[in-house]
Length: 504
Ligand SMILES: Nc1ncnc2c1ncn2[C@@H]1O[C@H](COP(=O)(O)OP(=O)(O)OP(=O)(O)O)[C@@H](O)[C@H]1O
Image (cartoon, rainbow, N blue to C red; front, side, top):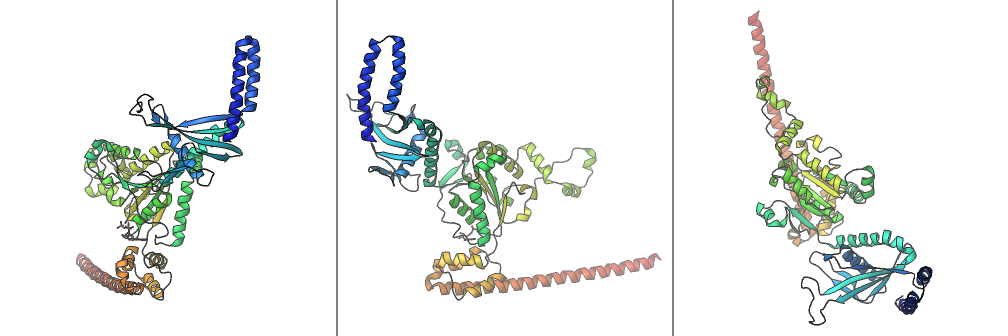
């Protein structure tokens, strides 16, 4: 392509000379006719269009440039390019490849052939050899794309959009994930760093290492895939592109681990929203507005972080003042509390969910919200109904399937003669995966996997003994209670009979 374009260029230069002469010698009407003929000749000899994409546009970074650069870098690895550059920024997980100055590659899109070329021009003042303006970079970088005129619509319509989307997706995959927290001092905000503080998120949890029933795990993975690919679906049905998950279960069953696995699976950032640090609804709104797309907003221990049992307002009407305190408590409903909180601007769970619906419906970008709790029964069912929390995921005690994942993770064991005994015990005792994992840890494994498994069996047996003892004691207590009740009711009946006799 390079050679043929040069050849065509020299032919065009000759034609340009002839055209200049014609313009001087011929009258206007004749010139117009020759001009149209000229364009046809020009298109015949050089039917190409060139688009230039510069690094800076009007003094500002041109976003398309970096996306094109990433796209071409990814294409260049399997193509004919010989001179490549490798860079790594502090915010990316690995290095990125791009075309070196003057390098060319070809690309194809829906039957159209495209020629890309990278340029770099040094920006020096010829007399001083210095940069013309200190605030500008030393060089002017750009890419050109050349294609046949008949593909103009395809290139400006679909192809460039495709290049930008692919480039953006590669950049997204290669960026370092972050975890944000709002649990920071007020000073932080006032120093202009925003309301969230972030650090790199490097949790190793994945769905492979997460110990839970494989069927349940599969369902969650499928749900996440459907969500992340659901852009068209959500816009078609007119719903905010968001998904809510409620993770519930006893401590140490892997709720936080599951969040990390989801973030790693989707390559999303995490916003760890500490509601106790949020003053009111407007503070919450600001925080939510500062979150980015492709992120997970997490509220851990939701039952502890928000006050849904705020004191009811004293009733103003006189007749109601006569009502007893107990009656007031009974008639208390969460709807009333919500409306009271609305008036005072106080933070409410329902307010939170409404903001999320409102804000995210408007922005059309994907987000996930996860609540965790150890006590699902404490939550108001209206607040976690389907549509708000789309999937309720129970993180339960460690059974055999979950144990097998832990044994593989920690001991690299897929089978062992002791597994059968462990399976039996895990059916009878409720232990968290966290407690099981503790026995399989490296520090315990110095004597080999056999020792770890023996220790685990020992611990499970003790837990079983304790559970049996506890249940016996509980049964004993219940027996005592029912004895007392029986004694009391017999006494009551006999008293009542004596009263009846007296009355007669
Ligand atoms: N299902 C699991 N799969 C793999 N590891 C687990 C699982 N559950 C617990 N663990 C291990 O136990 C540790 C504690 O688990 P995690 O913090 O995820 O539990 P949690 O349910 O969030 O607990 P809490 O309710 O106390 O916050 C984790 O670091 C992990 O190593």
